[in-house]
Each structure stands twice: as structure tokens, then as C-alpha cells.
Length: 401
Image 1 (cartoon, rainbow, N blue to C red):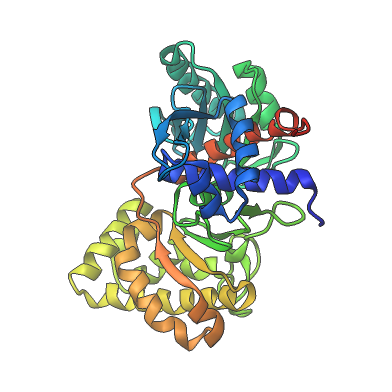
Image 2 (cartoon, helix red, strand yellow):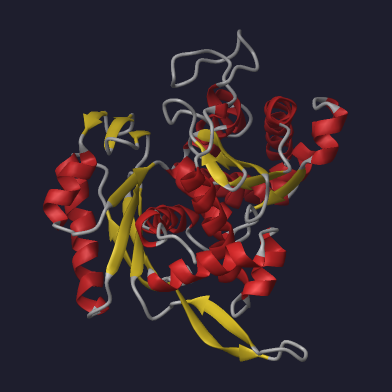
């Protein structure tokens, strides 16, 4: 699809603000150098961001003989964005200022039986009530919510949440009616929000071709090109976990056989370990994964063999992604990465060259997300920030003279 002038303007705006958030305070001249934009373009965008209340001038610096340069920073005293991470057992809400710094957070525990839309919405509403009572006069600029499963972004519908058996739930409409907010609500799933979080505050900032691999109960790949999330025709891009590496392999929860997820998703990893060690089924999924990591650390043969087997399948799956997409950077994230990554990732990296083509393998940097932040909530809030920046279409549409 051909980019419009508005699309280009917004991409440039995102690039400027991402660098400003990373390196504030800074000047228009430095922003121009870091983004490869002209000083005139950056100046126009900064003027619009100031009018929108997103950026402020915070002082001046010596320019080396000329007029002192104005220093810029995000307007941390202005409005806030809210990001909500909704999972099967909790609602985690974070409030961010315009530098994407957390200024408040609330956790709500959910019982497994609380799986109706109205019950989930009540937990979000409870968390919202708590933070709104503490925000005072600070304006909420937008609300982003991450829901498990498939999400129709345009219509704000939870298309399918398998663990809750939700089908075509008009979640945005229901949540908006309950909260009565005067700002937009943005919905997406964790795969997409984590990727957006990486673009704004993680290793993906400034990367041209990014893949974020989520290893958890489910498995997926978030893709971003040119600093923008790639959604595909139906917001289904990134279902890497449901690509096949063995047509005769075990059945996946999607109904197909031999999917990557059926080999490297958390249930598959623990099943593999259970064939060698009975502890895999003696605790919750997260407890069992931690036990596997501890057993590997202790050098137990069953754990070492399990990690080796999973690493081999992961290497085959990642090689397919590298060969197809040819990314500059691959970031591993998700709770399984956090728990088992020290064992799994080095073993996977040793096996990857046997599966991937030489050129895409050499081009790709591999990293683990080591930020001590909830990237799901951060990405959801960043979606709200991006939505707020869309107002530049009206704020910045005047002719420059």
C-alpha cells in the first residue's frame, strides 16, 4: 500500500519522539541527526508536538558560537496514558507519563472462574477507579488494553480467546460503556503490544526490520518494519507458532499437526520433560518450568536432554523465520524466555547455524529482553500514545510560512 503524506508525517513524528524519550533533554539539531530528517522537518514536528502538549522546552544550551539551542523533553507533567495487561489470572494496569515512565500501577487478581467479559471488565474498572482517584487533574490521553487471543483491532472485538471460550465479544464497546471515558480505547493482543513496547522503549527502537519472538504458553512472532507494527491483512501476521515444522508431528491446539508451538510452547516443553521426570506434572505450569530450569542448572540428565530437544526444534523454527523475513534484530520475550532462557537460548544459538541460511543468519542480531518492565502494558500504553499523536493530522495540518 502506498504511503500518504500523513503516513510519512506520523512515522517521522514517532521517530522524533522515540529519540526524544530515549535521550532527553536534546535539541532539534541532534534529533535531526539521529533521525536522518532535515532540521526544518524536525522543527515543524516539534512545533506540533509542543502545541499538542506532548513536548516542552526545558532550557537552552551553548551552540558553539551561535544562538543558544533550545533543549526539548517530553512533557512529563502533562497528560498520561494507561496500559492494561489482561491475562487469564490477573489484570495489571500501569499509568505512564509522556516519557513512558510508570507513575502508578494496580494489580487485580482474577480467579480462573472469572472468565466472563463482564467479570474481566469489572476488574479493569476497579483498577481504573483506583488510579483515577490518585491522578487528580491530570488528563488521561488514551487507554490501551491487551487481551489474550485474537483481536479485531478496527472493531474493538475479541474474536477468539480460547482459554475463556470467547467468540466475537464487543469488548471495546462494553468497556467504554462501563468506564465512560472521553478518550479512545485501543485493543490488541500481547504479541502485538510487546512488539510496540519494543519499538518505543526496548531494543527495537530505531531498528528497520524487527522480529519479537514470544515464548510462553503460546508462541508467536511480532513483526515491525520501518518502525511500524506489521499486522497483515487481518491482524493475523506473526502466527509463527502455527507454522509447521513436521507435518507428522504432535497435534497443536490450533488443530494442525507439527506446529512450532506444539514443540516449544510451555505445555510441549513440560510434556517433553514429563517423559523423563515426573516432576513436570506435579505443580502448576510456571512452577514446573522453574523446576525444569533448576534441574538444568543442577546438571540433571532429564532436564539437559529436554532443553536440548526443545532447542533443536526452536532452532528449526527460528531459521524458517530468518530465511523468510531476513530481520536485522530478533528479540526473545515471554515468560518461558524469562524462566528457562539461560538454559534454552545458548543451546538454541549453538544449533541455529545448522538450519539457517548463511546470509540472513549473519545479518540478524539475537537478543533477550532484559528490561525489568511489563512490556505488554507498556506496549498497550504506547498504542494509546500513537493514537493521540494521530491528532497531528489536525494540529499540524496548517501551512508553514
